[in-house]
Amino acid sequence: MTRTDWTRADVAALFDLPFDDLMFRAQTVHRQHHAPGEVQLCTLLSIKTGGCPEDCGYCSQSVKADSGLKADKLMDVTAVLASAAEAKAAGSQRFCMGAAWREPKDRDMDAIVEMVSGVRAMGLETCMTLGMLTADQARRLAEAGLDYYNHNIDTSPENYGNVITTRTFQERLDTLSEVRAAGISVCCGGIVGMGETRADRVGFVHALATLPQHPESVPVNALVPVKGTVLGNMLADTPLAKIDDIEFVRTVAVARITMPRSMVRLSAGRESVSEATQALCFMAGANSIFTGDKLLTTGNAGGGADAALFAKLGLKPMVAEEPMRASIKIGSGESE
Ligand code: SAM
Ligand code: DTB
Ligand code: SF4
Image (cartoon, rainbow, N blue to C red):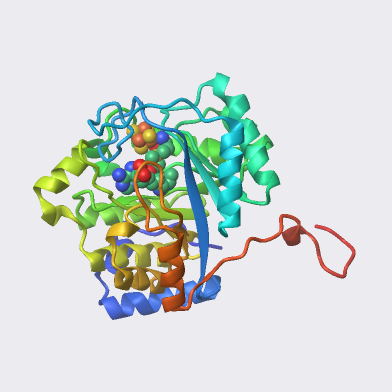
């Protein structure tokens, strides 16, 4: 059984370990549960950009941000499928579709469902992030074959109100329960480098590692400071708020140790993280990245840079399991 009863003191003690010992523990746990040197490639697409009514202090897509981003309507299903085909051709295993919504409107659900089933039919894993969901919307997504739903807790429960005021930490947990109840796998993580304290990072990892079931994917984003957002402006004024590289690696390592089976994803902010620090993150147990030259609205290193980094480090892209492979016993003639 994977442990979910971590105390804050346990998590804080891991953060406090000498760096060498922390890395050794993270590597040991990583190799017990995952193939070393294999990294999952995921591609992001913003299917509905900008004009979001929420006030997340980091986000370029909030109506409260003065980021100059223009609000678009929901993309056409055909355009989404064309983009998924490109991601597959570039070697991606998972296609993640994000919408700048507080929650989806029921009238949008037919198109969303078509996107999920179309992308899945290409043999890609599907992930969506659409904001809060009702039980009924979660059920519809599950029926369409959605594999993962991304819904981040973003930071510690205590720090949440300093970053977002238009929804509560508890509302995040409520949607995560609906996603689980519908049988969809959970992708849930957050952001570091927002000027939070070490105690907040402890509280953040602790909140994830004590969920009734660990998220199957844990994205660890480093804040991308976008001009015109509350946090982007703050970072421009106080550059020291940028997270220290070693502290970033520590956060990845503690996530790996406390959630041994989860995929830990280096998400936003890799462009500003050196190759050496990324290498330490992989050694600390990160085994998934967003590839391609764009995240949702901000830039990403791009496939070429990632291929060069993988070659330098001897990493290889994780290969997607065939959808039926897990459920068929080869040679036995039976299926589970
Ligand atoms: N609207 C949906 C929601 O918030 O649930 C989905 C999209 S939202 C952009 C997904 C996640 O991206 C956020 O929860 C946050 O963790 C991350 N994110 C957004 N802007 C970011 C930034 N500037 N830097 C780092 N991470 C960011
Ligand atoms: C997550 O944790 N990171 C991704 C994904 N989930 C949806 C989004 C990163 C967004 C970075 C800022 C942007 O490009 O707008
Ligand atoms: Fe909206 Fe999501 Fe951005 Fe928050 S993070 S403003 S909910 S798009």
